[in-house]
Amino acid sequence: MLQPVLWIAALPALAAAHPVDECSTKPPAFFLAGDSTTAIEGGWGNGLLAPLIKPAWGVNIGKSGATTASFVGGGYWDNVTTHLRENADKFDCYVTISFGHNDQKPNSGVTFEEYQANLIRFANEVKSLGGIPLLTSSLTRRAFPSDSEHNATDSLHNERLAAIEAAKETHSTVIDLNAASLAYVNAIGKQASWEYNYGDDKKDTTHFNARGEAVFGRMVVDLVIRAKPSLKRWFTPNNNMSYAIWHNLPA
Image (cartoon, rainbow, N blue to C red; front, side, top):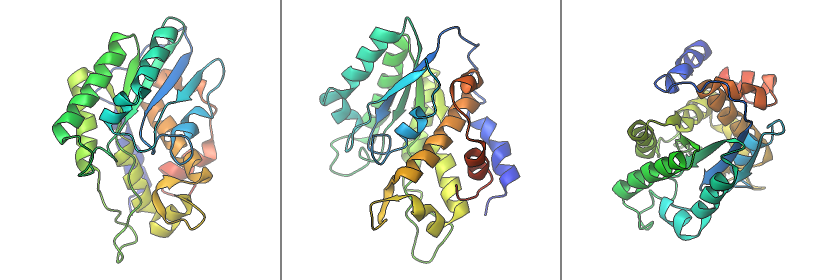
């Protein structure tokens, strides 16, 4: 099991390469772009938005089943950019960009190279419209080998590296949710992590029930604050949940 002090100490390095924004006079707005692991009902997105303190606000534009290509083709990316155009003058607009679960599927129609290029294009377009991209690596699946309680399958490793590379290429911030979520579910183990599974039978090891949405949404909140400390005042804290997450305890 990971030692809590070592994991906590490692977290600042996730964002260390990126400059911290100075405190702004404008409140933040968050526009969430992603697949079902971000989307309403089963994703972490609403868990990120729920603790926002007004006048900060956000919109979850995550789409179940989306790839980086279908998100554009279905008009969802246009929704993101419309929100940016309409609000960048009044708010500091942050866009979380989190894809990979569907892009990696053999029948997705998206090659890895296209996936990587799409992440880069998304980040550059956000910046060109006055927004701040947060390239958020893919949430881990909570799938464990039958003989292992603390070694979840690292099935999105390459997609994590793609998000990190896209952030590097575009001089953007990476929110390394993949590393954080994988470390957490490995630490608390299969049975504890499956308490967050979606569905009455709790067999969906990708999506969340309401508690999982809150816990992993809080994980993203904490990672965002570590990357952008000036945003801390815009989120209602949940000290008990944050303590549990970062000390490898079921939350």
